[in-house]
Length: 262
Image 1 (tube, rainbow, N blue to C red):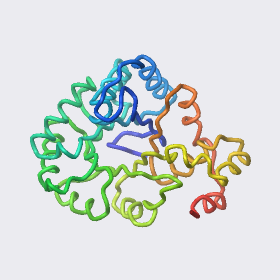
Image 2 (tube, rainbow, N blue to C red):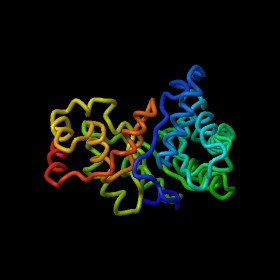
Image 3 (cartoon, one colour):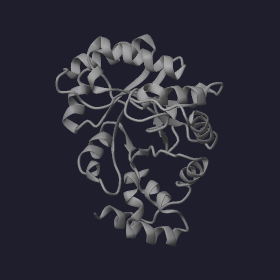
Image 4 (tube, rainbow, N blue to C red):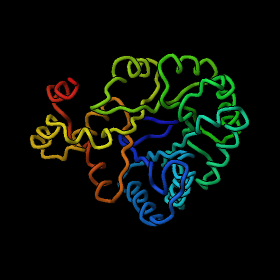
């Protein structure tokens, strides 16, 4: 699959809680997380997702350190602007701050993290357009947008992707959002693809893990990757290895139907 005109790995890596939590940085495990991200890149996972909110921007700094010295044209960096920063000049400043923390020449995919009803989408998208024109951002996307909001945003600029929650415990995107995206060439990026661990205890998943000789996480990611790019977080190189080998097999059609039934 192409993402921002680059060949994207079928599964990505999320960085939520790497380097801190909600706007609060944590520097205690920096070396570990940098090594985890670099290991993922070495395993062929080239989609790295972060946000200005993660650790107050520190997750972006860790991504910047991890990609330093590597072939930037083979890496897809996604970051996101927080909904309180969606006015024109705030978007510009947020993107430039993210770029500085990433220590990169550009951001591949810049997403509106959540919609904000108090700021007109036209204003935000015009700022996004300016970022593309000046080369700060390669392409623009959204996150947590409904079909209606996507249609409104697309009046002002092309949307490359929509990042939404999508897992076996939350299959709602399959109803309307994913068909809309597929019809319009918009990629779906799945956050919380493992349902924050809940999907792994699903009895159907456990049975399929035995059938295929795989882990429950690999079964779930294999299902989610059929129509999206899942971006699970991996806290260790072992988790990265598990994720990286989750798509080298194919679920039978009847097993896909089994998981589709909620």
